[in-house]
Length: 310
Image (cartoon, rainbow, N blue to C red):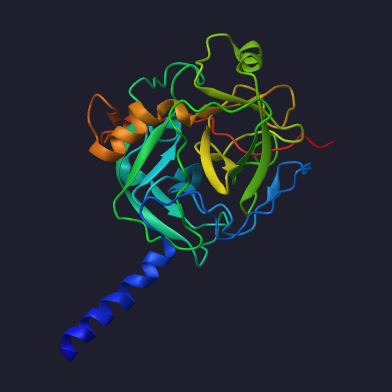
């Protein structure tokens, strides 16, 4: 009787810390509250408080971080298709819990990639904004959730943002139009939802409807933030409404709106089926291993940047 009681007590002590960190199904809660400035007017965005955007992921290759992503479960990261379509699985590692761009943080965890699922209608030969630029990365091991690593919530399928809705984009992308200056710490920037017709008028009428059109008066997006999360706070939790995608304008200009993938358009027919069933051919294109000679790809990623300085 005493031995049995001792074993039960030991199990409870081992499990309790994990339950305190993350309960399966919970999402969108930042234990370190981000500093939100409604008068956000800092060129290139503001430096984020470490750990305040715990779903933020960074994709790495042998050169370093090249794209962002958003943790949506203990095994899956959402990102932009153009970030991963032409890459080998062994070429990519995913980091979570990171704040500094080029130095490892104590809170940071690294993961190898088990599988990459690209939306079946994505076609890299077509202009970005005219195809679903969205993909899911499956990690080789489950994530150990901590205060600095938590998943963001997915929106309900078909949810539409109201005009003027406030969103926050985060990333480590370039902070000047020449792509020569990158921040050492995670940046955040506030953007506002605009009518999709404004983006169509500015960037072309052939753009798909599953996009979020947004503008930030004091900054834009450029190389390095592609695939990163664009979130909105709703009833105390953070929902992943957008994925940073590429736009055709020159970084650092305030000449037009910014375009993000609308996550809610892909919940029922892409994200949920893959999370529940795995890599079915009718759900997604599974990125296969390729030879190195077939992997050359010029990638226009994007980031939070401000107007050019003179």
